[in-house]
Length: 458
Image (cartoon, helix red, strand yellow):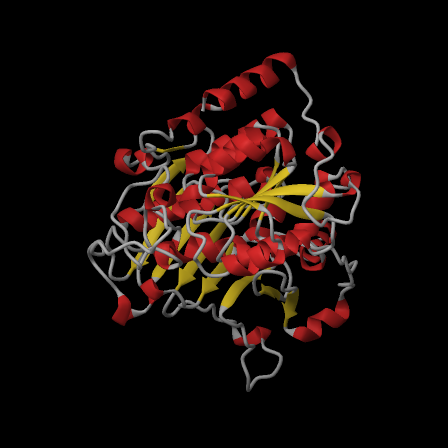
């Protein structure tokens, strides 16, 4: 810890320019045929679960290669797949030790772990001059996102949040439609996500914390909990159901919201809301997220954009309704799917509907598409590879922390409303909840002893 603090202090005071490890040391992963000058060395925080797909995606074009792994449970799902694919990569349980001992060989870090563990690993990597790719949502609290956005500016590293649909053709389509006025004067957006995770299934609901169970051999539970609220190990948390628990996950809003409202938020310049209304929180408790959740976010006018109301619904009765005047045929309503957004374009006789991730947008009714020039450039750019290329000095990422961070803050405000089942009033300038002191305190977390350092780096 002292060594990392000394590194941060020295680099800040002296204006030190961080040199990529492939230039400074010539290091390369075992068996790597590429010359060091053409390969990004990755330190991977999280090797299993979702990382089973993220790490291969980052390395898929041959421009990145893992040189260090950090995971609290090497017996978890998908870990073996990555270890077999890249044998000989150094393995650590603690990402702090990985950065201490292998940091000189690392150019960029992927952080693919439960939500509550994103912040500390990311902040440490940035303070050491490493570029960072972080799964969505960016952080588990409003304060953590704020700190990472500040760190992005301070340490001047490449960043990317893992909302993969935000890169490429569909994102460019939405951006261009806003520029051309095809999307304009939007005052209300309906967003929805159908039920999927365990907490959205009535027969699997719980009201109390799970009972303690024996830990799997090799799991370091204390490291898994990290800076968050400690509860004894249960298989309900690890390896995946953590998403439904307030101390560790962000529910359906934090998970899928990053894929559903990302383009609305970015290209309509939503910023931060002034009000969040908790309209429906079925089977509410403070252990897991609601069975069904209906909420309303109010955003003020922004430049050319009028004030906007975002209606979010997940679970039962969530899907938006299309008025008959926008149907393609009188007999059949449009199929909207299990997730997406729908909104009316002000001053026009059509609506815009989009699903999630990399799904494109379409006009309702379809016949209206014949009257407008809707063609946009087909950009075959991969979200993960765009990060790797940006690390090598080629272009920029589409969802850096300056973009993904504020979106995450909107979602964390919604999670606070879900936790308390209360309406919130928020001041975007002071970045404080003004009508509820208890809820306002939840904008930040009090890290467990031993994890405070990371919250003081910017």
